[in-house]
Image (tube, rainbow, N blue to C red; front, side, top):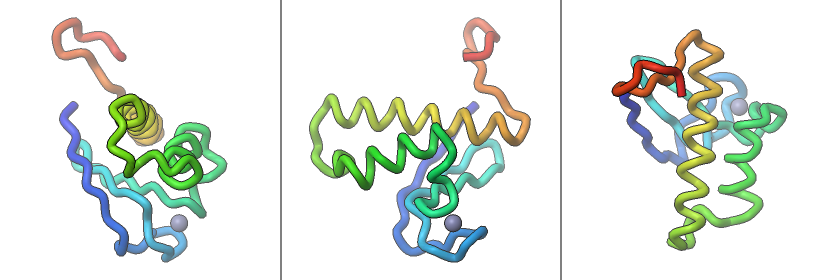
Length: 96
Ligand SMILES: [Zn+2]
């Protein structure tokens, strides 16, 4: 699966109308990360904490950046799984 990610501050959440923290686009699906709506979802909550609570999203620290990438991937996998998608290793054909 190929995914594109864009960070936006002003697009409204389609569920509550608050600004979303992040949109991600994957296989025609639009994923929204909303601090209000997604705080009880485990994968989303970790991503929200990384951005908001820890404040690590803007530091430029390599370890923090790698952690953010890992959390974002976990969140996207979780959201795509809810929509019936699974991430597959293109070399092995196995779900990741
Ligand atoms: Zn919302």
